[in-house]
Image (cartoon, rainbow, N blue to C red; front, side):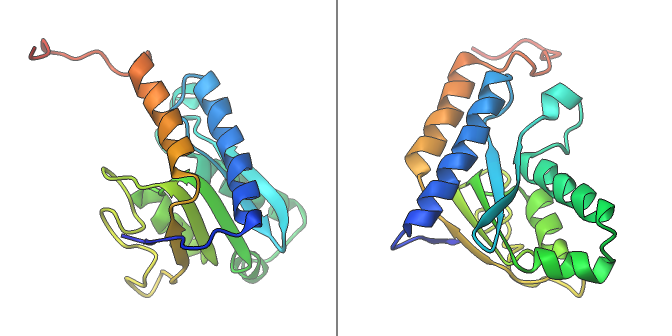
Length: 179
């Protein structure tokens, strides 16, 4: 498991609050409430929230939404692949829930500098809970710093709210549920 943040700096709290705002927008849209912001040199350059139900695309996690915003911006600026890689190597991601294996793998390939997350993802976590994709696993990936435990209670509370109200977008079971 990724280490817990022992001393949380005020900037991390401020960025995580903005990620939580994105998660609340996801919750308001009947999405799993996960949100993120990407920061470069102290400035928020992208944000995202889960949009899997809205788009009917299982890959539209908060992190992937934010990555796509950056890639589109940087493409319009005419940045080369090397320039994009350098930009990602200076970025920090704040996300309310530990990135899943898909997102952690993508962020590793892109070469993100570091990730801070709220709560662990015990089912699909790619930063220590299930797999540790933040440490090098092959020649296409890069290590990144990863720490959890920032505003965990708030992140869990949003997830609990979503799951307690039920997911109206969940597929209907094909067989009766066991009581």
